[in-house]
Amino acid sequence: MQPISVDVVQTKLSEFLNQEVYLHLETTNGAYAAHRFGQPMAVCAYIRNGKVQFERATIAGDKPYRVGLKMADGWIYAQGLTDFEVDAKGRLLLAGHDEEGRLAVSLQLSRTPFPMSVLDEEGV
Image (tube, rainbow, N blue to C red; front, side, top):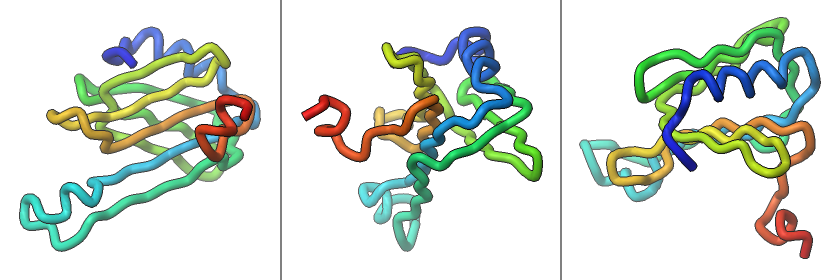
């Protein structure tokens, strides 16, 4: 992954407009953070291979960034994004890492389902 380039990410987001795509979205402060900052517990949200269609997609902010995907009846929103990659399969992979490099948020879009395990990804 590399630091987000707003122009590149915005262009890629636009390529997914008005078509059914697969969404991976997760946020976490991780079990590693439960004892820090007075947090009583770790929290997380996760969806993998949710089929969505959005009519508008916008990246905004000044590192970290936020992405909003406007659907016909609502929004998908992720904030705290720092890095991106467009992989060989054309998937847009966005992630937000904290100052220690740990994953805090991930938003990914694909025209095909995401693998459910590393073995699926490698075709084993």
